[in-house]
Each structure stands twice: as structure tokens, then as C-alpha cells.
Length: 242
Image (cartoon, rainbow, N blue to C red; front, side, top):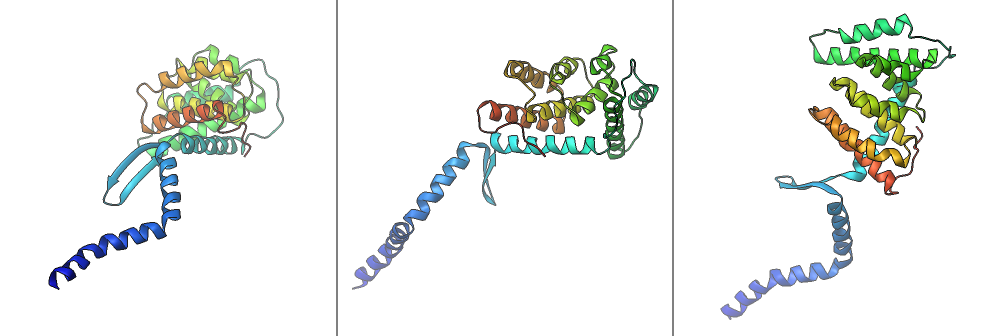
């Protein structure tokens, strides 16, 4: 009798488990399907004290970049509305801002970054309002003026901007300027202003810009590449309007 009781105890847990699996077979099948889909898109899978952590890669990154691009356009264009005036040279106001950007010295990182972003937006506003030839901004190979061109592209992107941005990206070295260049590229991709023939150059530029990049720039480069790949693969349609 004792042996019989022990046998029943030994079989109780496996039997209960089998019954539970059979009863919940539909739910388990759905769970495994979703898990497989998540794993197939995962950039990183780790197991820790909080359980299984799956970080999705391309699709999530692409969507994040589209949101970033739309937000960048909205921020840049808040103060970029107004009548455009054609000019034949670069206004002194823009040159003064470019000089201020190049010589900016603020010890606090956040304050310095905030001021750089403000100057970039102000320069982009001048370029858009004054109707300055954006190619003219690159002739001097001045990074601050290249930043002004990138800011204008974010505010009011045109089909001709992608070649200008790609040309400037090879000689711009400041991380802040390179970040804005990549942001401008993401806006152009998002707006459907990057023809297929430009994609190899874009990918090459993203690779070269990534040399020596800090973490924020590295993240933006990765997400921008994912956005381009997703549009090429037909997973996301361009443009996305904000």
C-alpha cells in the first residue's frame, strides 16, 4: 500500500502538467508563435533575473527614426515660417551665428548642447526665409555653414538636398554637425526624397560618419540605416507625414 501511495505521488505532478498543457494547447501555440516572431526580429536576447529580455531591432528602430525625423521637422519649422527673400550672398546675420557656433565655449555640456541646437535652428530659419542657395553654404567648407544647410533641410527638405548632405558629410568632423547631417538624411528618407540610386551613397556615408561617433550619433546612424532598409524592403512606406 505504501508503494502504491508513493507511485501516485510520483505520477501526480507529471500528470497535472500534461493535463495543463493539453488544456492550454491553443494558448501555448499562440504564445510560441509570437515568441518566434519576436526572436526573429531581435537585436539582442538576454536572460537575467527579470527573465527573458528581447530587444527588437530593425522594425522598431525604423519606426523610432521616422518619429525622430518628424519631430525634428516640427521643431525646426516652428520659427521658419515667413516670406522668402532672394539674396545673392550669405547674410551677415548668418555669418555671425556661424562664427558664434564655431567659437562657442560653455562648460556645462547640457547648456552647451542646448545653445548649439538653438543656433542651428536660427541659422536654418535664416537660410529658409532668405532663400539662400544651399550649395553656396558648402563652398567655404565651413562646418557651421554646413550645419545651417542641414538645419534648412530639416525644416524644408528638397530633392537636391541629399547630394549636398552626402557631399558635406565626408568633410564635417564635429559630432554635433554630423548628428544634424544624419538627422537631415533621415528626414529626406522619411519624405521620400532619396531616389534608389542614392541609397548606396547614403549607406556608405552612414558608415563613414560612424567612425569615431559617440553613443547618440551611433544610435541615430543605426536607426537611420534601419529606416532606409525597411523602406527599400517595402516594410514601411514613405513618406510619413507629421
